[in-house]
Amino acid sequence: MNDKVKEILEQLEDGVKSVFDSEKYKKYLKTMSSFHNYSFNNSLLISMQNPEATYVAGFTTWKKLKRYVVKGEKGIAILAPCGFNRYIEKDKINPDTKKPVIDPNTGKVEKVKIPVDANRFRAVYVFDISQTKGELLQLNLIEELKGEVKDYKKFLESLKEATDYKIVFENIKGNVKGYCNFEKELIAIKEGMDEKHVVKTAIHEIAHSLLHGKDNKCNNEISRKAAEVQAESVAYVVCSHYGIETGEYSFGYIAGWSRDKKTEELKESLSVIQKTSNFIINRVDDAYRELGLLKDNKTEEKGGKSLNDLKKQINDYRHNASPKCAQNVVKKDLTNER
Image (cartoon, rainbow, N blue to C red; front, side, top):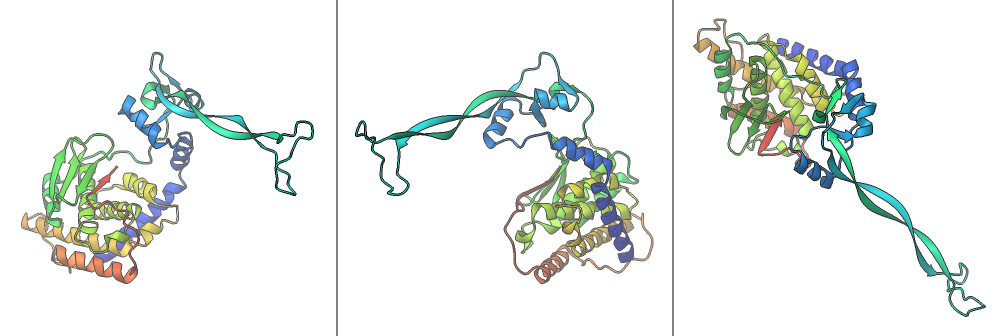
């Protein structure tokens, strides 16, 4: 099984790298370059006026993207800086003596006007993409997986053996597919998704529960980027092991959380991903044997016979590989898949 997992990891790395060279990625970057990063105040104004807004831009920007604001749509008011010059009077200073210059005719200190940059703000209007029509834009690198999974219900039940967390389905709003609440030891999966995406999301969040929960001594050193790369990589490996193809989603997801095409987050986590994937696969296999769905001889378990064994192995690996913990940038109570 280890050889198979290693082979899958190699496929994963190649697949993620291919995303950066794809036409889809280039279109995505071009589209994203057209949207501004708004200030906190403007983000708040947008949210107050249109809570469902996702991608907003001005009338001219939409026109450049070959989309047009629907007639009758009301703009979202935000604040834009309006620079101008104003002048203030100051005493004229002699550059040599550093003293005020006296006007010989009036006997008074000469004055000079100094331009001062100043900012005022004016209201401008932007529109959400939902208020426009026109050419389709490449807004995401990933699309929700579609398709069924063999023995879906039994497979999902078997996955529960890999975590102590309770797994539930919820009506989650927006683009979030699931989340892992470390404090409540709860994994929630979005209702209404196809079986393939449900299974992948379940494994993604189980990986978070195993790798990034409150029991992990050194999770302070794991950045949000690395945590998401690890969780999605584990989901890809486990799904691939059982013949569930998720590359069309996982490659883009991991690329989106990677710093660049060198995929350092993935390379630095290969050992952790392999151990965690092996652990989940062994747990699922054990459950399958009890259900009579798997009759081969049990493979040697490399990932540990218990959750505590796995967590100890992961913590030992992290301390050896990176003894100094960095800043805590992983939320300890909630990690979600978008």
